[in-house]
Image (cartoon, rainbow, N blue to C red):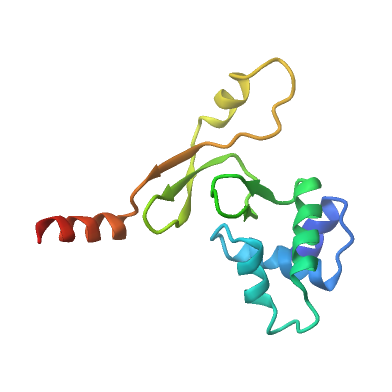
Length: 142
């Protein structure tokens, strides 16, 4: 929790119990969760936690740059505790979202845009994850 507390403070966020729990979950579970997934994961250990609190906490975390909001899922907003420059892969079958490292391309991407300040880049690859690809291949062979 010390790492989480320091991380929040470094982004100008007062570390409450709820904020630390949400941020800790994001830092320790790189699954790009929704508000509901975060709430479901934390509600048993924090009975007073509400979905509204999770939503408001995420809104603050995004506003302060501590968390990235991913507009890549049409059904619900996803959140990423990793704010470093990276791309995402989304399986079109099961919806899993995984990080793709962009070794050596970060500065190149930042300089391709207008002369102003680029604060966010979202690069998304879509296709089939290995498990869904294997399932599809088995279905096509039958």
